Image (tube, rainbow, N blue to C red; front, side):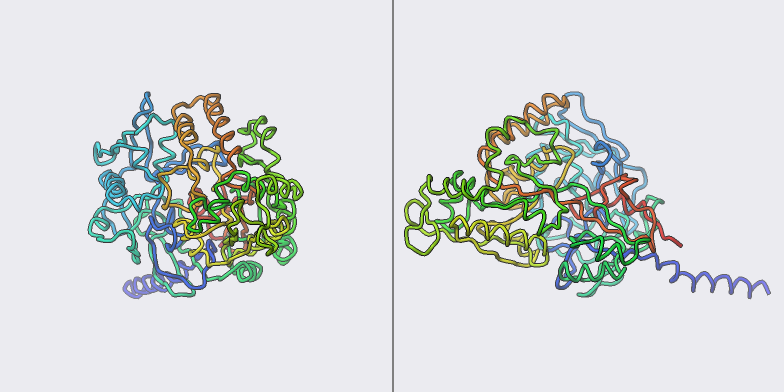
Length: 548
């Protein structure tokens, strides 16, 4: 009798396991025509966007929605030296990689030394920021900084930590696909991967008991239209897509469960590649008068109202501060240069005339002052329908003032690669949101990042701006930081290397039918977006649990 009861209990446990494992969170991060199995956390183009944070947990997440407070993850604390010249991170005790091997300070040291050995992996140019890394003991890592910095922890936490016992034997880390990753985050296991869908499931050795979701599922969706269909049908639990008229096409279908919340986020801007291989275009792109005239040809209001259905926030600030960083904006900058951030077709034409950009060959489009032809395409991802509409409006405006502009729509990975490699003429791009404008400026205008990230795609660099950004980090005094930022934004506004048009919302849709614990407008505890530029998505995942 006892044996029968024992067998029955064992069988019940065994057969119940699959049902228990069905807490599957279906999400969308990136559009794709097919999934490619790549989980290299240093890859900025073809790696799956669920790699960072979910497979490779950061040392710390800084919560922009809570005064940038640190939320400790792999690290349990950090201590910045009084002179701001070094910083120590202390790891949590007894951390393990997903294969069960210990995660120690040696792995952290290995990772940063590895980036020094293979600088192509270093997508934030961390070795321009630090001069050394030392494993003090099994739990403690000390970084020596190249310059004093009050933002050292935030800078260092941007990079993934990888296991030495795996990566030390990787001969070609730049092209390594890392198909079966060994990670530290909550979702490291890949039990299923096809071109149409993949599952990313619970790390068997994850340290945080807050995790209540067993798997994340990523259906392949090619563009915003397919994403809209999946969202409106209730297939997706968590989304990050532009959905036109969302109240009617999504919320109205199930008001009890279908929700969204949009808050101001990344700045969207047009840019010219100032190092383009096209010599004639390069002449124009490097002329600030040409850039100013092009900026005034951009009908930002129509982009917001028509392409964005009114969801983005207008940004006419030539320094890029906009609504998100309005507390950092120097009013005198807008007084002196603000006209170049506003739509004014007549002023655009007048400035082009004044600068010598006239139609010299009779084809209906303006040429360079020396008579050479200007003709360029603006690249935009083929799946981002709202941005395609935005670029279409831009092209119409540029053509109306006499510039031979066109639209080109590569796939997102190709677009990203072109921006990184500099193989394009013009583009629409965005800069990630942060607690202050320091990080967007740092990402956009650091010469050491050229060829490593899409954020430097305009290839405009200025020694004074870089010095001012370094000066910004030398102090924690807000008044002194603002003084440095005022000077930097004036240089940027005067040179107009990028042409801001609006700030995207945090695209965020959520379905409460299967999971609860979501960020809402009433409980905005973290940035809710599942975008790969938002490390706080990890904290959002940990707040979720199945309804049943």
